[in-house]
Every structure is written in structure tokens, then in C-alpha cells.
Image 1 (cartoon, rainbow, N blue to C red):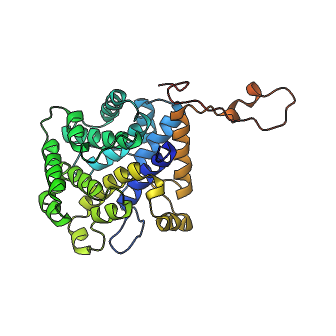
Image 2 (cartoon, one colour; image 1 turned 30 degrees about the horizontal axis):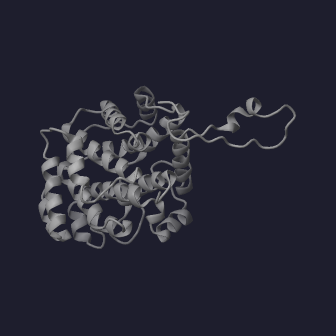
Image 3 (cartoon, rainbow, N blue to C red; image 1 turned 90 degrees about the vertical axis):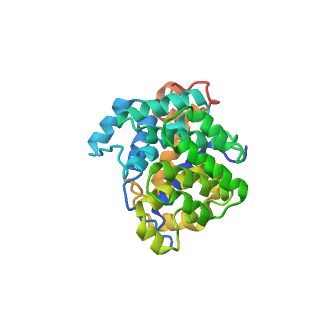
Amino acid sequence: MRYSPANRFKGTLLGAFLGESVASAGIQFQSYANLGRMALLGTESLIALGRLDLDDWIGRQQQESLHLAATDDISIEIIIATLPVALFFHENPIKLRQNLLHVLKIWDDDPVVRDGTLAVGYAIALALTEKLDPITLIPQTISFLGETPTSISKNLLIVQNLLEQGAGLSRAQAEFAKEEKLSNTIPMAFYCFLSTLEDFRLAVLRATDNGNSKVQAARPISSQATGAITGALSGAYNGISGIPVTWQVLLLQRNSPIWGLTSFSQMLKLSDALVAVWSGVYDVALNVRELTEEGCVEAPLSVYAAPRVIRSR
């Protein structure tokens, strides 16, 4: 295995944050919208319950007064919010699809949001299981979407043709940057990811038009959305190991809030906890009396299990 699940889980969440927050005037790491707070609330719910529970998600959302609806400006928030579900059920395509569609019931049933969620979630799942082939990813994704009235499948085919022709970024932008629509944002993110498959930094900078302040000023929402999705895809594929160390060091040094969390370190711990629950790790610290002999003062050892062995769904 090239990277561990923990490495890729962290890469996905951190990648989405960085892709959304990279600013035009250098690497600012300033989050201009609350794109990821709902994703972290969902992550906390999965960790606490070990399963997907919509009532718990909704309760956490209401507690923090987060109310999302499937509008042009907010659709990307919904897709980012489903990232923990894609991570948690990545090893089983059937459950992945079922649970992604299930969590979307929290919001309006918009077909474009549905297709965008399935496309991104499926690509992340292939990356985590190390089955992502850049040549076949788009045809596989279209097959996963199935018959649909949206234009996402058609636009993904355009991306496939652009990649086969070796088309540059400006040509891709000409195809998809005409309107700030999710049906254009998703294909553009796939293009930026697949055209710079092994380079997280370059993929994110291209997706966010970094260094081109005029373009970013003209379409800030589109840049944020494309950057967040590109970052999530590239982060899942390259893991946190593929994210520039200098960017990570800046986050650690500034110790600034991330999507409602107090620090970068807290996001990493939350990701580790999600991996632990997914993998079936038993938290001995919560059951010390049951697993230690009477009078034993030594710290108990953690017990691990292979996926699908003792974890619940």
C-alpha cells in the first residue's frame, strides 16, 4: 500500500480545507466561507456513534445554527459536508452510494448536487482503495452515476477528451468557466486533479487561479469551490504526505482556527479518530477495568482489528 488509510483520510480533509482557503495573494490559509464546518460535525457524529445517523447530524447542525440549502452558492458546502461519509464507507461501493444518497436527505434533493456528491465520493473511494486509474476514472465515475438528467456526465466526458488531447488549463477554463455552476465546477476540479495527478500543490494552485487576482476577483465562489474539490481529490490520492511541508508548517505555526476547530492539530486528531472507528480499533482507555487484571498499574495495550471484523455499520 502506497499510503495508509490514516494518511489519506488526513489528506482528504486537509486538502479540501487548503483548496478552499488558498488566497490569490500568496498562501494565506484564510477561510472565506464556512465550507467545511458541516463536514467536521459529520465526522464527529460518525466517531461518536460509529455509524451514519441523520438525526444526530441534524441535531449537531441545529446546535450550531448551520442551515444549508441546495442553492448555487451553497451546493459546494453540501458536497464538502459529505466527505466524511465517503471516507467512512469507501471500501464498499454499494454502501458508499447508499449512504451518500442517504445523507443528502438532510438537504434538498437537487439532482446536480446528488451527481456531484456521487462523483467526488466515488473518486475518493477509488483513491483510498488504490484502484484509481487516471485513464479509466472518468468512465468509471459516469457508470457509477448511472442515467441522470444533469450535464455532469457530459461535462466529464469533455474533461476526458481534453486530457487525451493534452489540452492546457486555459482551454479547460474556456469550457467550464463561463458560468459559476456546480455542473461546471465538478468537471473543472476533475481536470485540475487528473492533469497534475502527483502534484497536490500545482493542482490546487491551478484550480484556484492562484497568482491571477483578476480571475479570482471575477469569480471568487467558483475558485473556492473548484479548489476545495480539487484539494479533496488530490489529498485522497496523494495523502497528507503529498501536501507541501511548508504549507503544513505554516498551519502549525499560526495555530489558527480551521473550519470551527481551534487548530490544525485538532483536525489531524479528529481524522485519526475517524480512522480508528472505521478500522475497528477498540478504545481500551474507555474500558480499563474490564481489560486489566485487578491491581495492575501498567497502561493497557490497544487492541486492533482488521477492517470488517469487529466494527459496526
